Structure formats: C-alpha cells, structure tokens
Image (cartoon, rainbow, N blue to C red; front, side, top):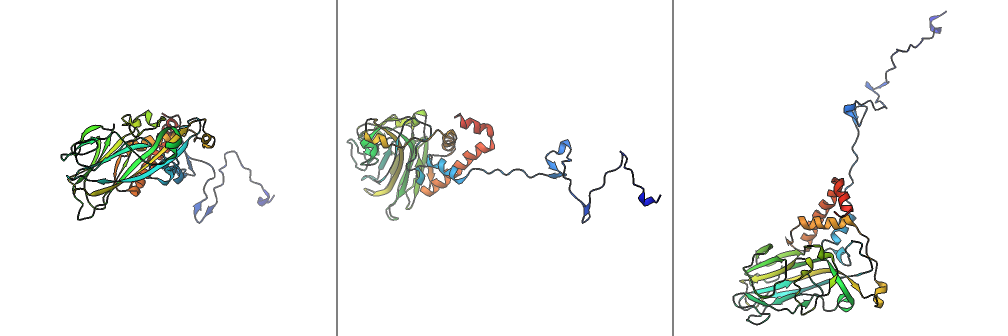
Length: 345
C-alpha cells in the first residue's frame, strides 16, 4: 500500500499545531492564557482601563447655581432639599456708594437678611447713624432694603437665602484715591457704638485704596438655620440672628474727605413661601427634588473656599467652578463618599 495513502494516526499525546505566523510573528491567542498573577491580560497584553468620564459641564453649572451668587444660573435658583409645598424665587441686585466723612472714614454693613439688610454712613458726628472724627460708628438700627419693590416684600410669608455675595470696586480717580479699605466677615451684626479701622475679623482682607481695585465676598452658612424658612426682616429690626449666615462690613479709613471712594454691588438670591390663601399661591412652581450630592457639594465648596476673593465676578466664577469640580469629582474618586452624599451624611 503506498505511503501516501496511509493516514497518520493522531495519538493522545500529539502536539497541537502551532499558530500560523504572519510576518514572522505568532498570531495572538484568542483565549486568556494569563497566569493568576497576570489577570486582566489577554494574550499577555494589558487590557485598556475603562476611562472615567468625570463630571459634565452641566453638573458643575448646577452646583454653581446654588453656590455662586454671581452666576447667571443663580437667578431663580432654589435650595434642592425636597421641601414640601411650592415656593417662589427672586434675586435682589443693587449697589450703593461708599462715601467718606470729612475725616476720611466710611463704612457699609451688609447683613444676610431680606428684604431689609444693609446700612451705611457718610456723615460725621456723634448722633445715631453718624461716625465720629475718630472712627466710632453709632450704627443706626434702621436698615435699608436690598430692593425697594419686590415680590418678597409684597407677598412673601417666610424666606430663606440660597446664596448672597458682594463686589466692592474702587471708583475714585488716581488723583483722589487714598487710604485703606477693609473687608471683614462678621458672625453677628453689630449695633451701637462700633469702632472702625481697628477690629480684627474671623476673615479679613486689607488693601490700599487704588483705582480699579476689585474685591468680592460670598456669604457662608454657619449652621442648619441657614436653610430654614424664617420671617422677613423689617426696616426697624437689627437682624442679630443673621439667619445662621455670615455678614460683611466694608470700611475705609484715611481716605479723602467727603468723597465717593467705592461702589459696592450686591447679589442676593432668595426662596420664599406665600400665604396659601393668596391667589398667587396657585401659580407657585413646585420645589426641586432633594439632591443630596448637590447640597453636600455646596458644603464642600464653602469649606474649601474663602469668603473674600481678589478680583470681581469673573474671578469668583473661575474659583467656584474649580472648587465645584473638585467637590463633584471627589464623589467619583471615592464611592463610599458618594454613597454618604446620597444619604446626606
């Protein structure tokens, strides 16, 4: 019988055929032949790690809308804690000049209260609301409204602040700008005789009065009362309770006599209820659902961000966005932290 006709018998211990070669290289194996110490590799080649998507721009924008009072999305924002019932939102925005006295003193006080909450003085004297020649301010208890006419003051029953901030700009010319300005954070609103130019605050920034100087300040919640609905402030009440929010005082000393040195602008975003018997209550939009990651993220941003920042609105926006990204990314980096944020702890 010819040899070619003889079929080769394959025994059980026959070697398997080698993989076909291409260009002198072995074809990659289609099976995972990795050793126990080389798991996750296919054919000895590391598998690519899944790429972390990270936070999206709209996530950061939502975070900033309840943290940065100067953000365009902050107007009309509400605190997302799932509060039952329907509420309205309103933004108070205005400005006031800081004018010095004959001795070069000047001050404006901003309380975290609405609709009435700020106070100023540019008159020299010893009476109520005046500043002495040595800088002692006899603070008037009569407050000015952040907005003369508002839906809050007309129909509001109770309110709470969502965010609040102030931008101070030196608008004096190069020939008149002189002296020192100070921005200080207060835990409570002062009353009575108050000495300017010598008080050390928990957080403070002192600068020379120079043309074009801009400083910004963001109020911080100090406790759970900051998110509680409270009664509206009045023009004759000193809001010493401060709503569990920080407050601000802007001072100028050693400045030019009787001169408008600074222009100070405020942005306050509030959420408020109305009486259920009012017709307006029927059109109040529903409240947002509880979003614990956002509320926890806001706490993380406030804890890592100082209240007083160099620069104007744009500088604040860039800084808050950076801190908001870090806060939200921390939930992605640490699953346990994300779970804690979901449950509000």
